[in-house]
Length: 274
Image (spheres, rainbow, N blue to C red):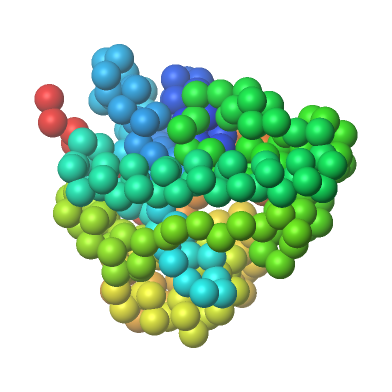
């Protein structure tokens, strides 16, 4: 089998608990599993504090996906092999989560003013265990109440950039994100470079990073080849993953539908301390 280095749990915007995600990875025979929740390490911490990380059957790589500031583009940087108790990392995460909550309340007010029958409590129910409340939770709630057919439509018409209920939020600068990942002992990689939408910007970012997500479900063969050569040009580690969210996945239906080779995945695995 192989590995998947880009997955999410219900501690951010996934639908699987950390335990369910690990169990699913074991069931299909994945050798490596990167848990990379948005702006939180709570999922990996739960596994660790319940004696499930490190564990048998699958090599878990603790990670986090952090958004970085840019006036026009969405830049997501994934940190791998991070210290999940690093003070600088947790301080940044707390600041990001606080900004998420402020934006969440503002978006709900806008939606209510536009006569959508949605409450903060409804979204929190959708979010479940997640402290990292995001637009995807709001979108899923809007779908539940029948306001939109699906999450994609909710983003296109109401929550995405340039739409009526879009609200910007605080994001750390790229250099800050990379620095805090390094302070936490991790490797900083650029997630889904095609989705950045600007390959000149991607190349500039490559000069600062440790790795590049070359293999990703929405990358066409030409994209994969381009990012492969870009990674080689800047001597970057090559990563990849499904961006699995469970029921709300955008590109894959099941864990294991998109994987990378052990040869690539093993470069991100460090034996955890006993």
